[in-house]
Length: 513
Image (cartoon, rainbow, N blue to C red):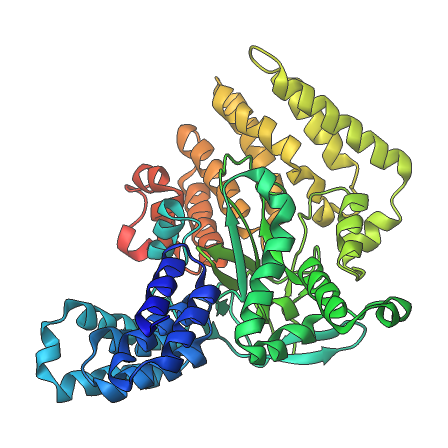
């Protein structure tokens, strides 16, 4: 076969997203082609490496391209993208600026000018941790499963350290403010899917993705395998090296991957997309149910971690791997699947909770579920009685009464909100939302807290007897909640545009946003 035949085969594989195979064919072509015919093979192989996040190998290929043709636009573009992928944003900016300065004819390329502008933005993001939250939210609304382009990684004032009793964790190197971004990370492996049934093979898909990357770039082993949980010694002795590494990868995915499968949220959701992914740095963040001080979000394929309350220098960065409103036994099962224990205040309290109390709470949940499913108007007083009884079951520790935010409660209250027909019923549902807000604010479920605040304000604005001072107090609370959840009150433009319009006479939009 001729070099051009291998190029054709490689191109076919690229179209089919078989990047590893394409790399193999381009490599075979490079081994037999003349030097003057190698430029397209190098350029094509580089983009395949980029697709697999093998940026150092891709960079080497772009260097080979530019050595032959310093003005090769695709070579320049891909060279900059490789530097992005390696976290070398300043080098990328220096490179593109140098190319444009020395070769004015390149200014005719809109693609390269856009690349410079985006590189400047990435360099700024990597230094400041400041991102356009509205652009992130727009991407998530329009293209939730597509990779987030033109966004840099960022690591705030944190370090991986040994944590007594936990192995490794992440500690704050400086004081961190509420809403401050702690990290923004690209995935090591990401598996998006739109069919819920496909989720059953998500772990296998992630392992396949990792194996493909390791086969091309063995250096990645240094990033992945330190995450593994040691396997039983007797099992290790019985396995071949290849089978052992495969078992370790499955353990790594089981214990360190994150997923969104439409369940576990505090609000009823109609999402039709799902994903599972492995992000290296976030995998070192340890868990706490009620003690978590951060919230995490994924936009496209990019993982953001943000502080939901002030974190002091030396404190551990903590997120919740579970929904804190789940019953204790359910949370415990998930936590133990991840091979650790949680000793937060909530877990310690619920471990010793009386079984009769647990059973009574479940009966209330069942009753609320029946009410939600009934035809016609719901019995509002029965709902209020159920809520008050649920609240009374934890009178000794009201700040830990997270069952108030259970999805079965929230669904009924959302319907109550729609069906309210008097000022009295508006006040009643507002009081219940206020109570749930008081428990959940400053927790990992920051986006849910924003929705609670919006519900409270909606009730207040519809009640002609509401005092201006009370409304202003909740407007201030809304701003604080938006900062904790999204880093900026501008997020209201996406999560509550109707509320912004409703409140326009009571706040100066420029001051609020």
